Length: 447
Image 1 (cartoon, one colour):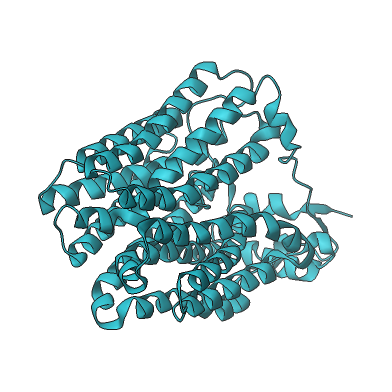
Image 2 (cartoon, rainbow, N blue to C red):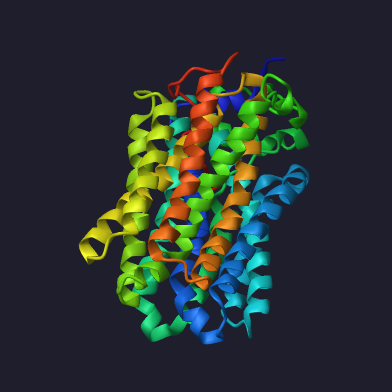
């Protein structure tokens, strides 16, 4: 009896409707993540005034959602293995949408923070699933493009949040704007109807046959073909990452990912407030947030265009350096035009560096450690993301000069730059080539 590995079948397939629909749905799910973060950064000035809370407390509200995402991402993997990725993703988005909507009616910051944490649990569970699905369904030669385009969903979501806030916060108030964050509930029936899923390991091969027939035509899958999904060899005990040969790069990459995401989430959360200290209006601050996220979309696209042409280490190091310089100069800018240009550049290089570093993490470990190493980097990076909003709020409450605040954020980028520079000088063993190869992941589907 002929046997077919469904994962390899999909990797070898030609691009078609099924692949595109999965990539589109995954990108829209990531859009929800970006929208959620962007909305909070846009409404924080109004929220702090409404509840008379400190910037540090407001930063903790931003960190609460990101902490929920950390725990949600850890917890849902086991559930998804039991009930399937599709139902797990639907439940995650439903939890996120409900909690995000309820947070608009929160009576105070404590209730708001709890609901933000719960929303993060749902969204944090959804993001690893979109990562797995986008990779699982992508043809081999299109995998890099799939990851890039789904990553654009995050920056697009943050951009959309800033645009909606600028247009509506004056008439709807911050509660009305927060309520729009419940839109992922509209995705639940769409995912239920259109997101495919095979559960070959669970013995449900009929659905897999239908998907494979839709991809390649029914003649490609004989009725007597036995379908199976080979277990992934890309996951090994995390202790391997701390062997003498790899411990230096493991520790340093943890600093690099944490520094990059601290910098990104700090400016996403606090840019409108920071530029207001330069004399801009609330509307002007939201415009700068739009430019920041617009630059992020451009940065992701540019990195996708550079894939395979430029060593990924150079992309990572160059992006770290450029975002740090952009933030330092931003602290000295006063005119609207200069601030806008620097915000755009900061977004382009901050998002670009977070995309490129994910690809870099797949190259610094040998094949058998690649999945575990990348997962470690993404998980530890979340700690930096959680710290970013809190750090920004604490700096504002201590009335740190604007130039120094931007310098602190830039310092995180310098730490990332130094860490990857040292890793580059000490890399040995397998998997150490420097260019992005066909099929390599280009960006963080978990931002």
